Amino acid sequence: MVKTADTGYMSRRLMKALEDLFLHYDYTVRDTNGGIVQFCYGDDGMDPAGMEGKNGKPLNFDRLFLRSKAICPSDGDDVILSSSDMRKILHEKLSEVGVSKLEEKDTSGNDIMSEAGFSADFIKSLQSFVEENTKLTETITEDDPKHLKNRNNFIPRISGISRRQLE
Image (cartoon, rainbow, N blue to C red; front, top):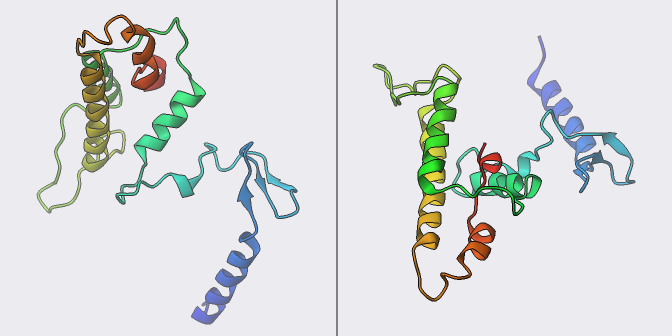
């Protein structure tokens, strides 16, 4: 049997040992002397400090999407998706992982997980994020006579989303 005082002491020692570690710009975990402790932070290389959204949601979709756009920049050859294409791709991807319809709560009031392990709240927040981006694309792509000739140049830079970035 482990006493509470012992576990508290071990916890404090562990936190003290880890407090000097930080995620470097090249995604390596380093100590204060610059020595590499781990080559890639976690399995996915994502920094958990930047994962949570300001609204308390478990994922900061805006930050993750900016990361996706930085990793997969759209060049002149990429086709920019229309808002209907974005919705269609989201529906296809959710169907691939077994999410066809959302049942929010079971009879006892608990969240129902999809076959893929996603909660209804997560799927709703993902859908609302994609919907916000589709509305931005629709707003920008409306015909405005002042900007019609330059539209193809600036739309991809403002809200242009390629299939590769969305996937």
